[in-house]
Length: 150
Length: 166
Image 1 (cartoon, each protein chain N blue to C red):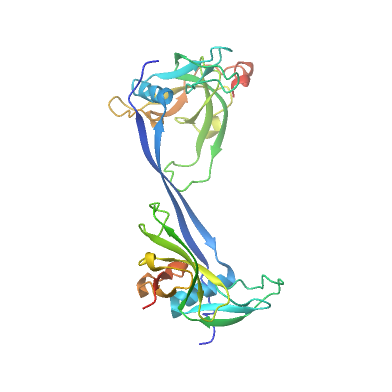
Image 2 (cartoon, chains in turn blue, purple; image 1 turned 90 degrees about the vertical axis):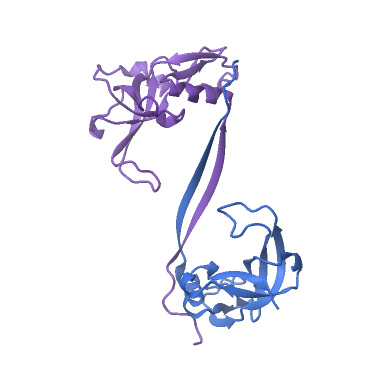
């Protein structure tokens, strides 16, 4: 069979999602945006859960008392990304996905560390870096990233 | 303040962004190059004789190779269709529009096509249509080289002639 020149096409698929937050995560995000505060909920059997769910995953009981936690905490898991996917990942490589147990919380929250990833270990202390006032929109990325605590 | 704001954030918007590099294989590249020349290529199954458009390397039915390329007419019959009344984000087509399967003359399967130059309510199974190509010099060798299909005005094709190639 005769050959033809290689044909290639660069295309971008985009899926715009609008995800309803619900009451509990909605108020958690409003706290980030309007108060620069991180809120959790004290629920049966688990202590202070961040981000809050509005119920206990231990026994299913509803509700929970709102508790403010600190913007500092300790890394409980870390995965360094060396090959970032443009448009998907938040930063160019290297950056790290981490679980952070914030001071005052009993559960760890997923987030990202932009700089100094080579220093990250389980147990490394980190602190939240807030997005500028005008850039906070009520999103988990109102915390722009975490950084290794000085 | 001992609690977060009473008024919750209602929603978050996240856009999944997936950049692809699509590389056409040899067979598909030949088909796309031919579109530039206003030609539609099919391939004949070496075992069953069935003609596939766009051409395939092998028949998905008999698994036999489809090595013979055949030029297919740029006209055919609407086998089935759908009037689209709901806009899709990222698609700049005026609604309502008609998305159809068109079995080209000589092909044993149909291709996806838009039907225009007629009212959506006038489209029907069996309607004879022809390709409307992009003007010379504007065809790029992609699926948009055929802009759409339009009615030819010929009498409708009988159902038996296309029901086996929907």
